[in-house]
Length: 468
Image (cartoon, rainbow, N blue to C red; front, top):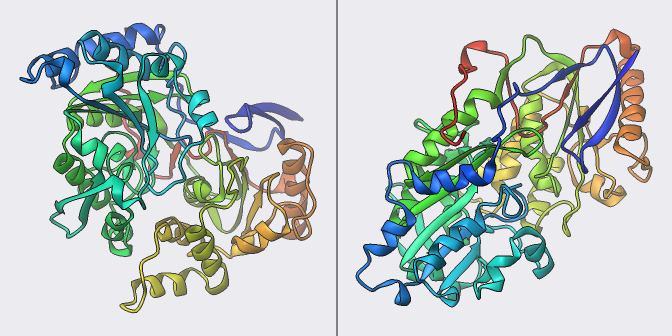
């Protein structure tokens, strides 16, 4: 017997899987019945903060002379910036209604060390009313020294190098999505500034080996998480007047809106997210199937899905990872391609020893490869089976793991479902057992859910202040 399931991959990809496969997913969460009303409610009654209108009114300069910077996420996050759940236009509209001219409002895409968005991507992602009112949208560039200003050091020694336009703005507003994050605990809040608006040099300690090797630099932990604390310190140093973040369910429908103070609003969102994104699992599996979700536009971004899946794999088990790598760089930047190939060549233990060496020169984006070492620390590389329709023999040769389909990666399937069926059969043949004799799990939420073998870590449900 077989059953059909869907997942947030390539426009809700559909799979037929054997009934013997355990489908693991986040507990259901209540969607906002009226997202537009919830957004307005959150902006009218912010958490531990004055409203946007009050913040502007208190400035001596007067709204006509104020400059306002609104920070948005790039295309690696499914933040609702258009439609009924769109959070960008309601913020811009309130600023405009206060008397700030559109030409004095700047929207900055917080790219961090990622590539900048193309104009077409911007027009697709962001509400057209923003540009129609004279607001400009620009990319942050972590390498452009003319765009950056150094405002000091953190207590851990990081250079606080921040986008100059942001620092020169009178009012600074952050927008984004709060989802689980395998280094910083959760996305959103302070991450719009760090790493979103920092210079490349600011990543050297923030994402250096010691910080990411800390046991608390992991999913859904903020307390004593050095990655979170470093990011928060930089955001406070740069200054944040207001934030608005959302939480989503596994189909990217809005479940909560959290606006107000940088810390208080973000912590409320993380508490709510934890109530439904972490779920208990009572066993490990011979084969764990997962996917890169919306975020998995390239190999770099699929690491989180692999890290979560690795928790559920038996010591001799396999991971099957499906990804729709639609980015212009299907693997990632030159930095990432260099370091991920190094990992493939020398293995996880040698890679971690190397990047700890005094002779090692820090390479941006080595942090994501360090996360991949968590996957391969106790797992043979060829037990990761990767499938992306955009990958060919060259890409598979550069990245750790093996192609899901037999051969060198030159073979491809028509759909993800067909690739999975062929790949499962090949893995079962390699193990030497029929599929019915193997324990198999399908992580329906891919990188978004947080499976846990310890039921004590799964929180009781809490209600969202964004529900109306």
